[in-house]
Length: 268
Length: 349
Image 1 (tube, each protein chain N blue to C red):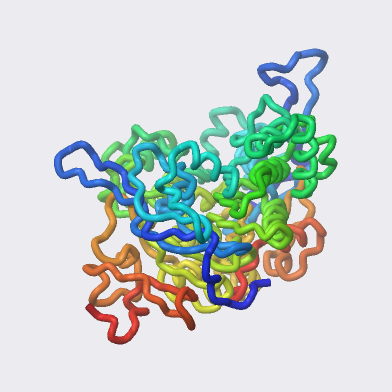
Image 2: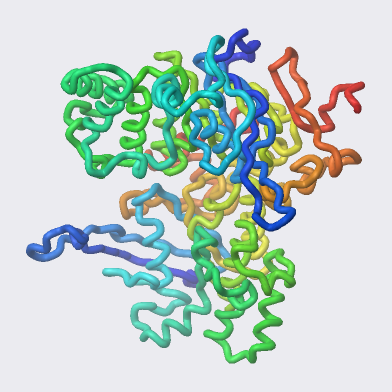
């Protein structure tokens, strides 16, 4: 059986030197951010993408959802090549793969209530009547551990952890098969992060969700991932089952990353 | 790596006593002032690295900013902050004398080295300027001094770097430049506010190693403000844990991680995922023991213990009474915990 998400030979280049003050002489030179990436995410699987800033992990996550159009290579979702789809078709497929962002403060519209935020994907992707959408949204809020009574609140009235739960509820609204979560806990308070990691794990278990987790926090990855891909300078330098990668890193870069994780002394 | 616990030196380098920082509340009638720091006391010895750990709203950054008189203008700051045995209370110094302390005996580095450096001046100019602000040197001599400061913080090719602009450096190199500037006047104490939060883990490890080396070579004391307990374990001699504007626990770092005394510290350390989790059995690992709820809003603190609403170990006195910071160590100043569970026998009322 083929994987849910299949990425093959993915390249992404961005033009360089088009800044405000740069002179435009000759053809724009290109910067290669992803240089031939292969990656699979199976149904219900959690694959973590780790790497330092500039490694290309966020670009890869965005290309996987066709939020960015790859320069070359193939992204297949459930066997279907995404770049072959027209805009309307792609939009229809989008309900099956959704994104959770790093900073819930920035990714929620401050002028829209929580209930409407969560119900909005349903307005886009379904023809449910308004009343139904509201009922569905209330159910989604409860599913992510929030009281349905919060539906009338605005994002600024919530805590960071609550806002991230809203972001997750919105992503779940269309009953996706795959969530792509870009650093879902790194903007949260330390004492709230475990709640969100637990929530993502329980959603995977109860909904059979696949998760592509982009993270620089290797302890969170160790706790959550089935498989880990290490990205360095636009290439995957190592990909292994999590247990193996953390016990016996094979690539020196992976070993360096693991060695740099601050050691918690006696508790470790 | 962590030195054995020793009694605090008789005269600490920096002593903070009953520091309080509050902000005017809303203008509406009945709007009470917001207390962001509620009676913080701790000390730092010479050559000691102390971690001030807490989450957002815990008051850790305000505590550090108050040391240098950098709290926001509308803040009301009270208490005592004494630098050195014969030192005056920093909170009573006028602006001019405070400016001499700032960057003089006390250096400071921040989270974002990119925004703390001026993009239109060279690194050499900025470090030399920091040197000349506190020492009467010629431009040429200050530039030479800048070069040796850059060498001290292990910036590669310091001579060539003098002519670089901040954007030509990486994040880690910029933080090294900031540290060089903070060292320019030969301070006794460095305040480091989340100095590695914006950096990648491998670079973070290098910067933390640099701070430890500077402590060893120069006898520099460091107050390291962080939200990351891993950073504390790696770097600090002692840790001061803040929650809801108060110190809730203070201990030698090794002891804190071996046997945290306060329920907040205990629960937080237990909730952190571990690298070893990956080798655990089964597809779905057991859930992390998460702490429910979120850190308190300084404008709406509970009347009793600040952690009580989230605490699994709360009992009768916790919701109504505020616990004191009880001495629980082998000798005074060794360990403290602000929890009724740690109240000494006979310490009631």
